[in-house]
Amino acid sequence: MKLEAKPIAHDFGLEISGIDLSKKITDAQFEVLLSYFYNQSMLLFRDQVLSPASQASLAHKFGQPKIETRKQFNFREHPEVSTIGNVTDSRGQPLSFFARGGFDWHIDGSAACHVNAATFLYAIEVPREGGDTLFLSTASAYENAPDELIRALEPVSFLSSFHAHNDPLLDSDPDSFIPLTVHEREALPAVWHRVIQTHPVTGRKVFYLNFQALEFDGVDNQKGQELFDQVLTLASSPGQEYRHQWKPGELIIWDNHAMLHSGTPSLMYESDRRLMHRSFIYTMPTERPLPNYREVSQIFMPNAKSICLSDFADRA
Image (cartoon, rainbow, N blue to C red; front, side):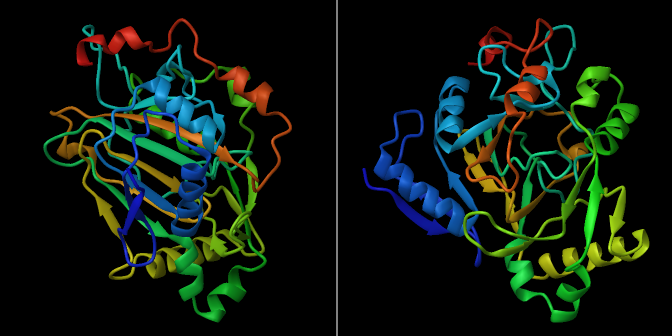
């Protein structure tokens, strides 16, 4: 079979066919996929049959997998893969991370010390209605931005924290996941990021944003939020947004250095079922070095309370 690609949105995204990702990918195939990934920022593969083992193997092909911070949803057998959705076990205990209400626009890893550039999201079960994912290009937004907006954001950095995002989720739904330990919290300190960055591979200028920023440097907090809102308005102008309605067996890989994404309200499918397998990958070269990669990864490795393959045996 020959790799084929067709555009998804007018300025980002490709649907890739002619490849079975559960099988070994040749170096030549991977070189083409990587070129597509960096040039188009998002890849969609349909009709795939990916086990957690296959997804973990593919993640390692792309770079160094990040071990997800909510370790109870990391597979013991394949910690590079975690679950999101609303699936529970026979006792009603969650088998996947469920953010009740859904997420607004965000960049995965923008509250982390290291930028986990690639996200893999693979659909196992999808609801009859809802559960869509929205995408925008922050690279295109920069290229279309007026000079005055770029000048205003050039000196700006923002401070972000995983806990500023995670703690309210737990407060609003205490049974949704196990709270992080003190040791785990200490491994996730707040971090500063520049708003305007240069993509470490393509060299394109991009906007890098976190809409839950704790504070700003270069402007006051109110002005910083106003500027972020201007970027979002620009990025989401008519024709710029892609909405993906999932089907089982679909995998999307996107570049967090060049994309924003958003969930849709979970209320639409809370009475139905949704299960996705997710992986985060530090692609190389990284925007920041990873001197403590092994140490931090070890902290979030699965334990006896984490999910395992047998939890999903009846859904195979």
